Image (cartoon, rainbow, N blue to C red; front, top):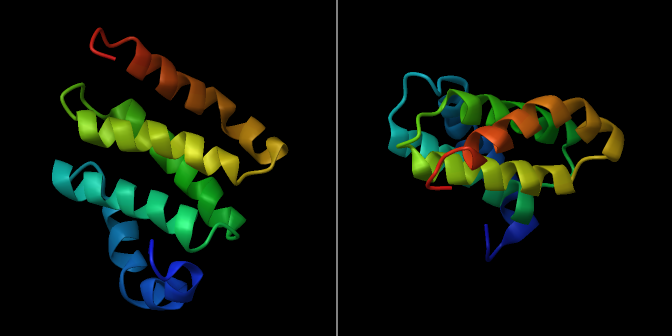
Length: 118
């Protein structure tokens, strides 16, 4: 994704994105490592390959907030990915779209910052 950027989007869409999308949908039952990989994958995918799919970005933002609120304090890598991901995804959203995401996004950030190790 770093090297081929948008040129790699079609290949990633057809062979990789579906798998990681399924991991995000099943976040409550997959391993922590799978969840960490999936959240990182989508951050990289949006940043380097496809930042124009506004519906996917909106759905990912909602999903990252939900995962953050669900995650346990010891899931530091997952939490780091989701919180960073919320910031990254918001960069590609219109202010109006992000405004609708604000309540859960702020809850997620508050949860992370309330941890003494934050």
